[in-house]
Length: 369
Image 1: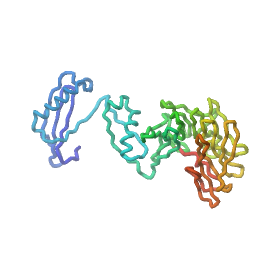
Image 2: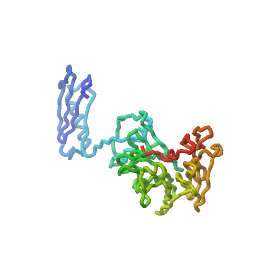
Image 3: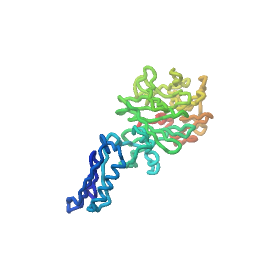
Image 4: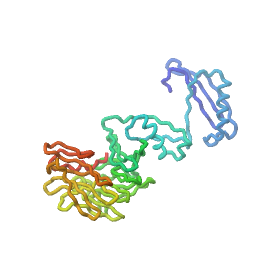
């Protein structure tokens, strides 16, 4: 306000009166050009809350109507009290139009009133367009909800985007610090019930979690596991992921895969494989993923509900490496493969591939942050 070159009126709405003062620039300082006060009826404002808004509005009108010394049309006022909430939040990078539509949905998480009963405004502090910012879409359900995470190069947070483009920010309450896989919270899978699975960093390691439709978090941790990384969930609430009894470092090199069904953990290991990654599960219980053989070559696989395994190879890879990242209810899979010319190729809609003889399955483990 004090960088203005024009006059401005300051308005104070007190418990017993409304007061106004007009300031005009005078060289490097300001001078008072006008001042007035108008009393308020008793109990118009009680404990900082406006009880009789009509009486307050009438008093303000009388104040300016009866004091022609006020010339400026610009008025500055402040708000205070328990009903005023100021919150700094971070959202995925989006256009200003998308932000305008999303901010009301986001605000509902922080405002303890009906969003229709409040006056809401926002100011963009940082557009988040720097090279360190990124947003990852990790899963989509049949209702058109997209789940994933966004980060600013320092920490990350999960999100759900509905079909109308509205974002809901998700942060695990225990997320703190960093781990070798990053920091913050991410979301890796979503089912048609709106339940999501993801992972958060804390105490130098990483933990898996389930978040239900009501926003309740449940930590997912196989018995004896020191670190857990979840990758998928179906509509029956069955979850697949990786775990380690040693620590988060083992998740980077030799993570045992598991299935969690009805509270029971089952290890998922492709027969004869040195490494197995479970990346997705259908409502029928089919599991898709990848495994590494003793020669260091990566292959995709499907595991039936009965526990039968089928290896999947992209013929264009010529045995150099195939990985499966996702599966839908029709049994279609997406993934990546390594071509004979050592160029990374994506199969169908596969998001990642590695240029190596044995495909680097760390690309299947999306880092936190």
